Length: 110
Length: 115
Image (tube, rainbow over all chains, first blue to last red; front, side, top):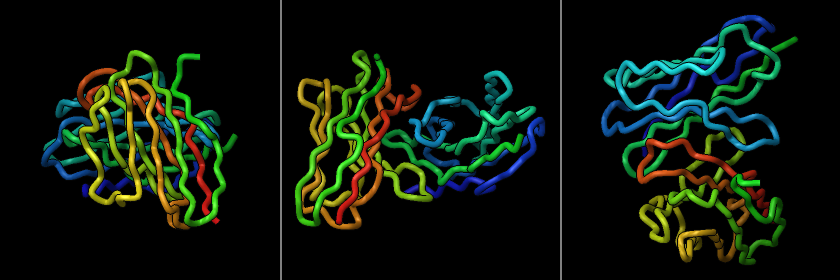
């Protein structure tokens, strides 16, 4: 069992604020890290797949970085919008399965 | 619609009954995953298939759980002698490629309630 920690557990921000979350995981047996967004009453949706130390990925206002040596990844949202409200999950892949964190629940207040 | 579908979306059953869920992945995807998700937790890995071969099964998974993927297309997850602790959302996901380097596409899930 892999211990994956996400912080904070929940976050409330005002529309227009920028925010970031952390995903921590053991650095051994690392193959890849996935980020997913899970909106209420919908299916989880993939944001990023990251594999290399130092990777930086960007999709619109959302970006992510990866540090495999120290075992963490950051997800950034610039200029949060109400439609960004969701739970953000990270999932390291160890070569045989994914281990999901408990997620960060983001609420963007208009 | 070419997304991942799951059936049924909701299932209420009495303790001790058997239930079976179905997942239809995106047609060209060769990997198929099953997860269980309970309130306040992230999805918990149950098992995965590469084509028709079941390659990994969670050590935490009771032997009451079994999954199949005949012909490498749709998959079924069966839970025998259900217990109240089995109440959860059961998610299926599929991905293209032979490793975890490809994003997973999730279905809408089957919510199981065991009374």
